[in-house]
Amino acid sequence: MAEDEYVIKALLADFPFLREIRDYVAERGLRLEDFEGNNEYVAAAVKKVEEALLRWPSKPLERFRTSDVEILSHPLAMAMIAMLESTFAKRRFAAYEAERYAAMLKNIREEQKKAIAYVASEVLGIRIREGQPPHEFWIHFADYLKLAVDLNEPRFKLVNRLLDKGYVAVTRAEAITLVKNGLEKLIHQRLEQMGKIPTPAFLADYVERLRQKLESMRQRESSAAVKLDPDKWPPCMQALRKRLLAGEPVSHFGNFAVAAFMLRTGMTVEEVMNVYMQRGDFDPRIARYQVEHIAGLKGSRTKYSVPKCETMQTHGLCIEEGKLCGGIKSPMQYYRRKAAVRVDKKGLEKV
Image 1 (spheres, helix red, strand yellow):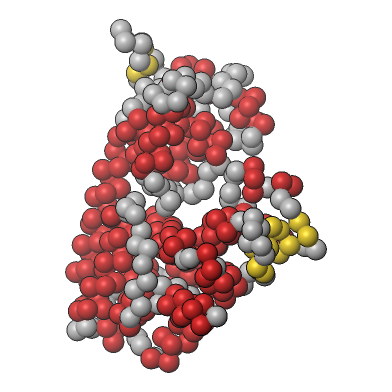
Image 2 (spheres, one colour):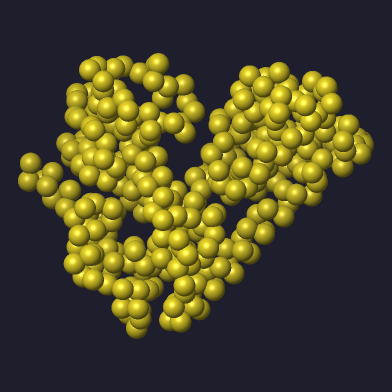
């Protein structure tokens, strides 16, 4: 029990949303201007922002970093994200921080799993109770539905879960996935609630450099993806592309459909990955494998076809029931009609 309490206390600095940490910060009565001249705190906050926006996806830190600097630099980093006035930055920071916290929870030893339930209940307000393997935790179905709404894997559908007296059985890994989902939404929500924060003079240079780096990165990542003129894409694919570039969630089938479409129009694996880089949870290793698999470069070596309009409709991805598309049967048929397509000697379709 004593060891459990130690782990929970060690988690406090890494989970600045816990009531104890928020109370601690509030008691200090710190204002933004109080950080002026404190280079250690400012440097730590800038590092947090850079790790999330510019260096991720690298493997998030998994160790505890308990200190006043770690605790107090977090709200400063949140403020700097707000100063950037970027929807992408908010989503990216929220996804990175959630991933970092999840990585630390995964590192907790089996006998210390009480800390997972503690974070779930104290940070997210989840009604959760401990169980026995393979169902280490039980989560109230109402809370489960809120956390699993964006998870597209069939195993997370409520109809496929074991229920007992209103609680859903989950494994330890599944519980951490659900907590990560909840943390990402919570962090993003709090960033939105912060609204627009004027940049104080002592942070102006830092924020401007971050803004320039962020803009340079986004231009570099998105430049290749627009050369095939997306205005000539079918409405369904235009909509999916816009959601990806905005960092918005897209279903598993939607990701597959638009990736297959982009590859069929002649885009390279790298160009397709550039579109997915805007997602807050982008992982280059996983993304590359999935795109190469769809392209026929991995696995069965079968190059996947673009789903037909009927299939897109079944998955709720068709726009206005196809009224804008002129009676075509597939997105590729629409593309060929709208674009001036020629096939070169290698068989690649080019605009």
